[in-house]
Length: 101
Image 1 (tube, rainbow, N blue to C red):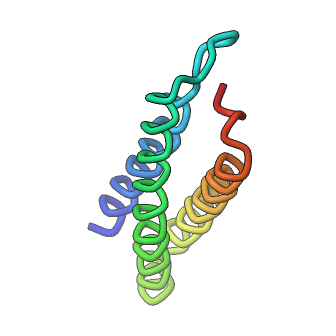
Image 2 (image 1 turned 60 degrees about the horizontal axis):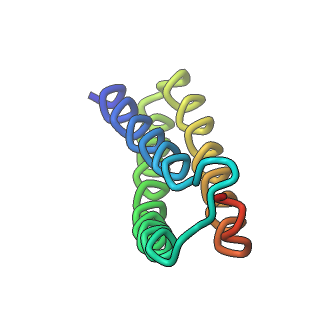
């Protein structure tokens, strides 16, 4: 049951990462006002989702520690690191939205 919860969390994190890639404009194409509005809206959604996912993975990690599920514990640490990296990417994009071009 815990491994399934981990798998689902991993899929959610992958989807968030993929949604950032989807925001990028093709090389040489200018970002329109409509694009900027979509990017802004999507970044706001991601900002809301990420803390909830981080909390979920932390809870799962705590459960894994209690149940002595070492492999799950290690996996949750790795997933949390991915989420921290995603958070950093979001911060960078917000500070320099032109990086999506």
